Length: 256
Image 1 (tube, rainbow, N blue to C red):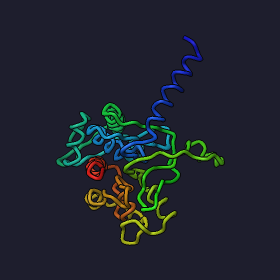
Image 2 (cartoon, rainbow, N blue to C red):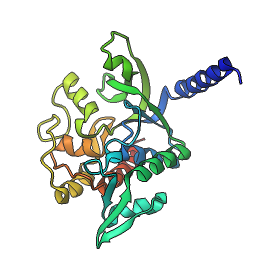
Image 3 (cartoon, helix red, strand yellow):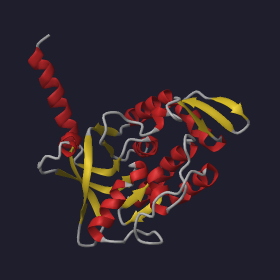
Image 4 (cartoon, rainbow, N blue to C red):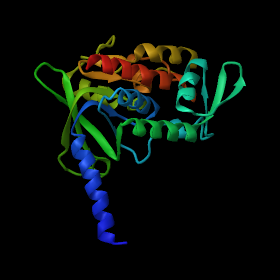
């Protein structure tokens, strides 16, 4: 084996994918469960979808399960998506299904990529592209290492017909919009309201309603949706996260 050929193979294949991903139908910020599920359903429809994940690994908070016990809970509605993905689960008691968090994350990720979605890890979203009609038309990206090291390195831009904020509790893309444009989200205050304390029963129900377009060209899914609209967090129950991702894909596809 030739060391240089190995290096060329990595750099060449990556750059071809990256250049091809500078224009897409849907850009997703965050490769948590909702973001990857949304990507899966969009890619299945033949919609060009790319996820940008700032971390080294995918899955958001799902791999850690509950307090580092790598088990997660799904209700009956959420279990339908587990079944579709072929993820194994067992019924703890009626209405409470247990799944291995590592198997769940790895399977969702694999299915999304096999459906045609692209995932670029270690890339952070630091801004959005907005034009005169104040519609978001893309993202501004930089290497996560650049951001973490606080280096002054200019970013690059990518174009998308729709953007999904799947950045979890932080709701980072929505916060960028309010920081740059003011209180213009379609929330009660026009800003990110912030999530409330844990209340799974309410949070799970609210999550689906909160999954919607929050600003022209920008949708919100997963815990970012509850954070934006001020609903409770849910802890280690993930059925709503998967259902939110599926709804985000439906809304995004309908807007294209």
